[in-house]
Image (cartoon, rainbow, N blue to C red):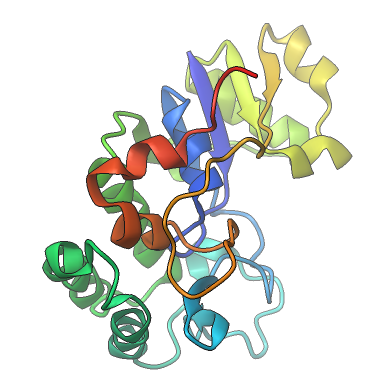
Amino acid sequence: MLVSIIQSCYIPWKGFFDLIGQCDEYVIFDRMQFVKRHWHNRNRIKTANGLEWLTIPVVTKGRFDQAIDEVEIEKPWAEKHWRALELAYRRAPFFETLAPLVQGWYERADKKMLLTDINELFTREIAALLGMRTRIVRDIDYPAEGTKTARLLAIAAAAGADRYLSGPSARAYLDESLLATAGIATEWMSYERYQEYPQLHGQFEHAVSVLDILFNAGPEAPRFVRQKSGP
């Protein structure tokens, strides 16, 4: 039973979905503190004028310690984001095919008042479109106390995990020995060996929203989300 426990992001890049797709279960870890200028409420797309941030406006004033699952939307945003995507990708090979579906996601997201619900909507829908069968749950389904490794361990144990897949940034704090004592082996994700695909607007860029792959590669998108195997 391979589990990953990671905070949600807005329309994440392919590495996020690569990690999810390798797991039996992904736990949305949104009872952790919201961090400004992080990926929680923003991501990048490629445009004719270069990389552009799409940022969901959220309420932060006076809420320095709020958790991600408490973050509220400040003002309407979805139509503006969709128009930016339309402008950037309307010439992409599969934009016309996917536009009604993706626009529908934005219309649904526009009705939600919490950032975590918006991120979950896009994560579930994109994972399904990529053919992933990973079970996606929220951390609230596994009540846990403590900080850092202790909290992750409590969630992983409650989920029945015997393996835990972590992103590389957690090396700074994750105590593998604590997990090992509980019979859970730690595996580390690396974000290398991704193949390039036909991409609009100049020099190839890996670190953009996975929507870039969907619009440019269509049904071939799943193979570009997974890393290339072999030498």
